[in-house]
Image: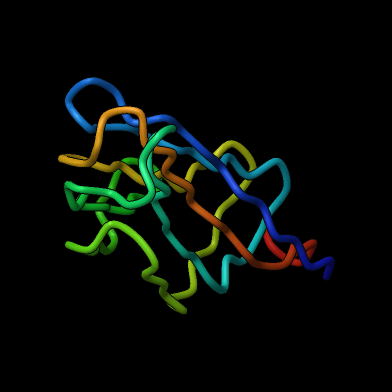
Amino acid sequence: MVPFLVPQQTTLDANGDGVATYTARVPVQINHTRVQVTPPPGQTATTRRARALVYACGWPLEGTYSGSNDQSDTRHVLLPGETLECRWTGGDPGATATLIVRGVSRSDLR
């Protein structure tokens, strides 16, 4: 097993929405996810609180109303080509939203 930590970022659009996607290239076990939102350029803090929802292969798994600085230790197994996606809604336009995925590759999964 090989550990990994991958951040996926997006800039929230004019509606304060955005999507960050992690796509597995090999079989993986995701052990930890974290979401965060940093203020848009020129701001020192966010003014609107984005909601974040996490999906695996298009199916809803979990979410947070804070949209930022929240984390989960729920384990997920993804096979090559499958995705873990975070969708933010209602945040500050121009803010940077990040999904951080931590886990291990699993050669025993097919």
